[in-house]
Image (cartoon, rainbow, N blue to C red):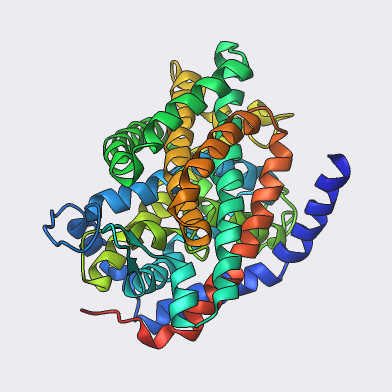
Length: 436
């Protein structure tokens, strides 16, 4: 396992210290300008997400599709991912995470627009869409579509499954001393009971769970920001300075170079919002709509909530706490910075622990749907049952794996998924409209 981990780390060093950063930033900037700053319509997307639709085309409401996307993206990336980004890339990584959200909204819009444009209706009335259908129907490349589906299937076991179940067991073991084996089994059981109901069951659970857990976490962060109010402006200033200055010039803070800040900021931002990976388009294709523009706006708002808001406030909480209590983070591991910040408030550790468990559980549910759609494309609906069994088993296995290995593998899978998806939206950009 150690040798394999080192190989994966070396591959990530090559991919994420240049090629992936350039590809993602170039894509986000291109679609930001090409779509005439479509990000300014994010609040229209939020309004549209709350409107009901009786459109016969689709399986779930726009809000259901949005919360399914958010369930898959609002996970440990918003908490542990931000913490590791600061620890490894310095405070400047927060700005890069935030920028992946602001600029990435345009990429999410493009992915979802094409995902709905090329979606397919099965004989049983169900809808399927996403990058695999864009690659097959738009670029007429079945091999690339198959490759993307295979990567999505693997990612569902890594990004969507192992990292989340591992975080649940790690949190419950640390806070309450529960056995990882027992919690891993219970997590697999609960997730299994939800996913057997398909998109309707997943959508219904996500519509209830996602808003509640998001509001709960944001309120806790607001309390911490108020408590650290004297350090908020210095924290924001340090985040901006550290993003563009070597650590020595930024006060010798955590992290080392501008490149390191960008590497971990963009990688963790991508892990959180998945803009560039294309998975949001899979959920968007299930929405009851015949208007790719409107649903793309709704789906784009998921990136806003996930990264611009959630990751942003988490980052400010972490950095302001480090400035306020520098001694508290000495010797802390990369994943503990958020925990240390939350310990300022009564029962803060338990509040954060419950947030991590809820976020991770939602991601397990949301990503199972992405994996199912990949299976349907590759093997037909008869493969869903086998996939669900394997997914549930992998939840248990992932709960006892090395977290370092899981994170590195997730970064590598993310990189491989980006190539076919970004290729498709670049080559088909003329089909994407920024107005109705």
